[in-house]
Image 1 (cartoon, one colour):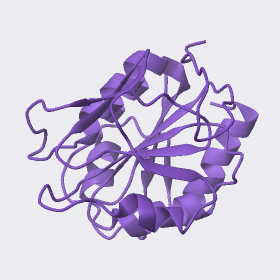
Image 2 (cartoon, rainbow, N blue to C red):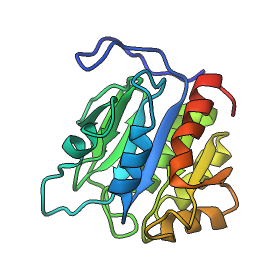
Image 3 (cartoon, rainbow, N blue to C red):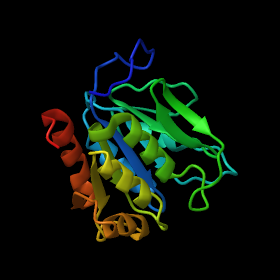
Image 4 (cartoon, rainbow, N blue to C red):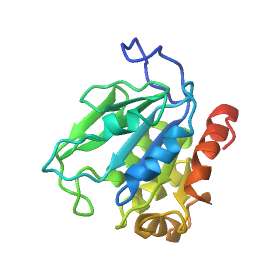
Amino acid sequence: MTQLDLGTSPLANPAPFSRVVAVAASTGGLKALSTILSGLPSDFGAPMIVVQHLSPSYPSQMAAILSRRTSLHVKQAEEGDRLYSGVVYLAPPKHHLLVNQAGLYLSDAERVHFTRPAADPLFESVAQQFRQQAIAVVLTGGNGDGAWGAQVIKQMGGKVIAQDQATSEHFGMPSAAIQTGVVDWILPIEAIAPKLITLITTGAM
């Protein structure tokens, strides 16, 4: 079982985990993320790593906004962060967010799908590190980011969830992932949190 060395953390009581949730979102993502996070319990048994396409020109207020909608701890990811259950890590503006055995790290590599942060690099790194324990979630957004990374997640034995068209503000990103044929569940936004809870608490994959 692939698992990070949790050590200690001032953020939360460290809890072992064997699943990692990686999320991609763009246009309409704040509302979608708010819906998901508000439906997750404080003892949610996995870390969540989120790439929301952001303007590089302004500081992100997402952590503060989302913290008001969930009992989970939400923070903007920093270089060297370790992963803990029940913590939501948000990619900062201007940087790709990746994961390795030591935890999270930031990259200034070239833009992917004309954006940085992008979901494809995150999904690839999560797939390589966690393999069948990885869960990718592709939410509303206007380009194809996340589709390639979802394929890598699937190839490594993980699972993929995509938001359905009816509840997506822009269906470009979920549609691109669905068209690859690797999506396991196409769900309305309000059904994604219950599905994640089931996957995490029962271990069913």
